[in-house]
Image 1: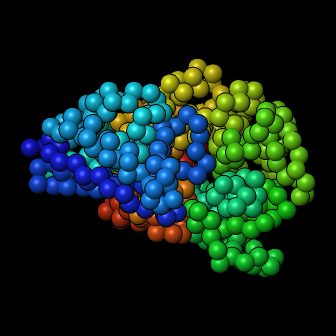
Image 2: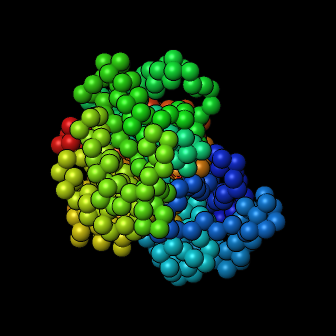
Image 3: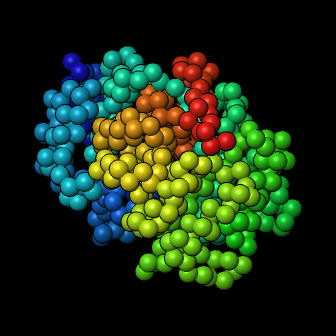
Length: 425
Ligand code: PGA
Ligand code: ZN
């Protein structure tokens, strides 16, 4: 009795109040719901999120696709074994074979595959992370958190060009301790901003602080100062998500220096941020070049010995794109977002291939996320090593942290301290 016997789909809202899909899957006498997250700085290689374009929610609704999908695809999913993630993925892809799932989008399949995993876990009497660990044949571990402190770019009205300045509690001895350290750093940052006359009451999409500072470097210096004031120098480090695709227009990167816009070529752009590595404790840089800027990615290759060079839009959790990156040796780590891959199985496959090649993996939420906590189980069960969820604030973020605090309290798995990052410290 572990096969899918019923699937329901309906329209729900994500943390930005934008319509998304909720899927409920029944296995035996158990049911589980999963809601698809969605991004703001989406790359062009990730599975699509198809909206109706007219009608409810000013065209942001998804009811039309959901109704066609229900008629055409759902009947073929009934009867598939709940733990056969690969078969579920295979059948889904027969209806929508392109990597970006151009017919129905990735949002419906990802919600269904996640809900299937969660319903199967219940029916098998297992924790969701245990089912993932069994699937990837790995020992589970609690991930090192990478936590947003200061936001800019598409998540904060472009207050600065950088999208995220994050902190990692690299020397924390437990997940619980690490989370508290980063909370302290955020508090310190808040005080520094207030002292400079900025309002800190409002937060960005992922709960981060934000302010119209003079530019990116002032924001990095602020987080760096907060780390020092917390006496966490050498024990907590900085990660950047540059989200460079957002800054790339007609072959040039448009950034702001002292209020003025400047246009940089690929090498100049990479040199601009790599100079920050000498001045601040930065150990990870995500999307340091635009998704298809080959020159920009080549320019980062030499830095792979020095810091974690992380690809988000570049790989879009798609195996074919990861394989290209592995062959080029242009990075050493990948962000894993299930909805970019459009199914749980595809995301896990990409993660496993990256791990097999010695790359670090960072399981990540989206800027438009939900109150669900499965991402914490995914990162733990897959022994991902790291997790990126946004800030310590806002319920769609704390849902994941709180689940990890529960797993930590239960001693469900050992904490993955900085082993994967050690070489960059
Ligand atoms: P997104 O942002 O969900 O808006 O894409 C998250 C990220 O870029 O990592
Ligand atoms: Zn990113």
